[in-house]
Structure formats: structure tokens, C-alpha cells
Amino acid sequence: MNWAAKLIGRRFHYGWLTVAVVFLVLLAAAGTRATPSVMMVPLEHQFGWSRATISLAISVNIALYGLMGPFAAAAMQRFGVRPTLLIALGTMAAGVALSSLMTHPWQMILIWGVMVGGSTGVAALSLSATVVTRWFTTHRGLVMGILTASSATGQLVFLPMLAAIVEHYGWRQVVWVVAAAAAIVLPLVAFLLPERPSDVKLRPYGEPHDAPAAATATRQNPLAIAFGTLAMASKTRDFWLLFFSFFICGASTNGYVGTHLIAMCGDYGMSEVQGASLLAAMGIFDLFGTTLSGWLSDRFNSRVLLFWYYGLRGLSLMYLPHAFGIDFFGLPLFAVFYGLDWIATVPPTVRLATDVYGKEAAPVVFGWVVAGHQLGAAFAALGAGMLRASLGTYTVASMISGGLCLVAAVIVLRINRPAKAPQPQAV
Image 1 (tube, rainbow, N blue to C red):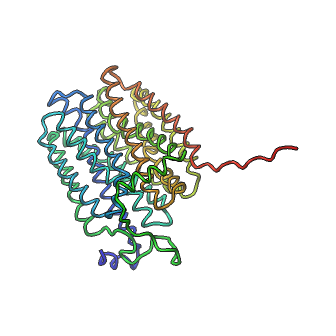
Image 2 (cartoon, rainbow, N blue to C red; image 1 turned 180 degrees about the vertical axis):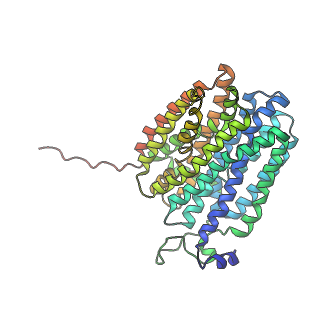
Image 3 (tube, helix red, strand yellow; image 1 turned 30 degrees about the vertical axis):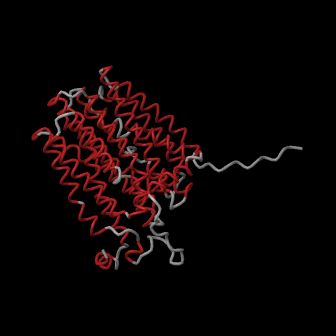
């Protein structure tokens, strides 16, 4: 890593190479998380598993993906980013490859739910928050937007390719491709990802030379770090506002749309590739929307940004059932409108968490907030599957998801609001 730092240090800060490596890690994890949605219909046809059964495995995956966040952030503080990531990527690649042998629903729950869900939870938003706070003092919102876009956009952009492989070669070939992608990024993490700027004799990007040195790795137990931070944060109102608003964020994005949109398109006579292409188009727009959101969060009030993001997302989800009935502009309009807002909520949420809890505690606090995000996603993935199985349509699920987003738009306006000064009494 020192040779890499010397090679690029003359013109670029090494923090940007760190961002590039983490970008690829998040991209591989995103492709892994996208895989179950294209496997849903083939597994249903081959093994006769119900959509509710498959949704259960996906909901376990999503829940563990979120619950791993605070413990992953704590492990990165205790053991380092690189060792934690290497173990997670190895587990991810092995679990995905092993799933090619599954023939029973409990095997899918164990492999895709537990193994893959837990390992992808390490390569998630808490990783982005840890890297951003360690390596950048300025442009944090922009960098968080870029990394968040890689996570969400990669999940969507990979879908057409994965759906095409399923259509022509079967679902088992998909898992081998995804396992190989996870394995490829292992050497990049091993050789190009330092722990901190001080490891390559640098300061965080934008930090003044006279600033105090950053804290080194703690020797405290990761479980103690994670639960201690939770105990501290849970006593504050802002934590619960962040938690429940992000619960709704997860329920309205990868829990509902990310998991069920391809199957929903099938209800209207569209092929899996067409449904995946729609998600991919949304991913392209998300790349611009989330990156722009990071830039905006460096300059504008994060509460106001979140109000508009959640409000517009809620309206777009209420429009979705009607989009299928509009011949030409219906679904493309939804893809643009919803795609720009897919996960633009992350940079302002990280900014608010950092403002409230400080630079050191913010990644772990945000990890717990992400746990709320993924619990909401698991709730929506399972709930939407059950509603579809009982009602034969996703319309009710779309309306519920949109309504929850409007509730979140109101909640976020109360986060980190300064206390009002007492007014003097009139004499």
C-alpha cells in the first residue's frame, strides 16, 4: 500500500483510491443482494416453492444485512477495516457458490438468509460511513453520496445481466457469476486498502495541518462498542426519529420495490428481463440523484432535503399501480421520478447523525439506524409477498408504502432541531 500511496501521492490524495476500492466492494455486494429477486420466479417454477416462502428467505437476508451494521462498524474500530472486510467477502463468495447445491427451502433460508445476509451487512452503509469519516474532513456528503450510489445503483444495474443469464442458462449459473465477482475484489482489499490516512503518512482530505491527530484503533470489545453506543444514543429523541424514518426508507426501497418489482411486472405480462431493465434504468437515475444529494447535503439543511425526498417518494409509489395502465409514459416516468430518489436519503441522514453524535460515534450510531432501515425492508419484503399471495395484486402494498413515506416526511423535520429559547413573560 505504501508503493501505491507514493505512486499517486504526487497528484491525488490516497483517500480517493480508498473510495474507489470501497466503491468496487459495495458494487460486488450490491450484485449479490440483487440476485434473489431474479431467482424468485425460477425457484418457484423448479421447486414449487411459494412466493411467500422465498420472500421469507429474502426478508431474513435483508434483516441480517441491516442488523450487522453496528457490529460491523464496531469490528472495524476494534480489528480494522481490512481484516473485517476480507472475512466478510470470503464468507459471501463461499455462501453464494454453495447455494448452487440447494434443493430445499430451509437451505435457501440458511445460505441466502443467514450467510449471505450477514456477510453483505459488513459491506454496507456502515462501511461507507466509517471510510468517509476517517478519510475526509471536507466533501463528506459528496463522497457518501458516491458510495451510497454504488451500493444502490449496482444492485439495480446488475439485474438485467443476471435476469438474462437466468433466462438463457438457469439460476445456478447466476450464483457462480456472483460468487466470482465477490472473490475478485478480495485482493483489491488486501493490497490497496489502508486502515487510516496515518498508515500512508497522510491526514484526512481537507483537514488542516494543525488539527489534532485522529484516534487510533480501540481495544474495547466490538460488542461492548456496539451496545454501549446504542445505550447512549437510544436515550435521545433524535436517534428514534432517525431510526423510524430510515425504517420507512428501507420498507419503501429495497424491501418493496427492489424485491417485488420484477414479480409485479410479471403480473402485467412483462418478462423478467423487462422488469430488471426497468430497475436498471432506475439505478442509472439513482447514481445521479444520490450523488447530487451528497453534494446538496454539504450545502443545505438536511432536514429539509429529507422532507422532500420522502414526500416525493411517497407520491411516486402511490402513482405506481396506475403507471402500468399508461401505454408509453407510465413506467418510464416512474423510473425517472422514483429512481432519482431511490436512496438519496442516505447522505443527509449520515450528516444528521454526525452532527448529533460526533465523528467517532456516528458510524456505529448510523449502523443502528441502518438496522432500522433493513428491518423495515424485511417487513416490506415479507408483507408485500403475503399481500400479493392473499389479494393477487400489489396495489394495496404500493399504497401502504407510499403512505408511510408521507409519514416519514413529517418525522424528519423534528431531527436535530435546536431547542427554542424561553420567551420572556409580558409584565
